[in-house]
Length: 360
Image (tube, rainbow, N blue to C red):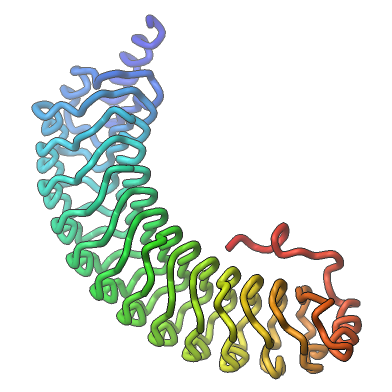
């Protein structure tokens, strides 16, 4: 206890000079009152403690802070409304606490650039006041209980990254089309999410879209408007078809649609995507590959294992970059087995997607 007390006193003394209070992992059950007397404090690090609550009457004294981390304090259950005084806040982390709601008073956080709200198991919604976070660039709300997003998220036009994995989201508002600067969007593990809004095609900067392990039954044709899209992950959904409009995604290099058990066809239009390097369609219900591979000069990895493919076009032999062609050999016609046999001199031997492919 003595060493802990000494460490706390040292941290408070250092903070008076540096304006950075470093009290992470100190075994605290409460915030030392002397910490609230530090003038002009800029950063507060309280992560990985056993803090019980954030005192209402004292929190407003930190009216100059621009960074606040209180993650991994499982007994913290409430953000006090006095945080309305934090008008300079730029980065906050409330992950792995017991917080159940975000108070409306956070509308004062107009300078907020990054917020992390991960593993808040009882957080079911975000308030409409999030629309006031007009400077926000990074939004992480993973492994919570979100069922939807407020339409006001469309006001967050400076966002560049959004992660909403592992929630209970059933639908997304059309307003996400206003996220024209978002480069990465993570929507994995939302089993109730069956559709993406048509407005997603307006996300002009989107480069990587992840919707694995969800409930998608179809995709909007507007995905073809995503000129910057380079990686599209749609593994383990309930897709029956893919939009041919994806051929317009001229930068698409990685496409994962494996484990869509009702997907019977990969549209022939996708063979026009000259930038395509990886296509994983393992464990679907495909009966055919592309009728021609002649446009796929950059193709390196092609996976159609655990399907019903019988024929492989001969022009696959012309693909100089190809390193993996994964297919059920015992289901192929004799001619196609001969084609694959000729391919093998350039292929990676004994290669299996499940163990060696880039993660989906």
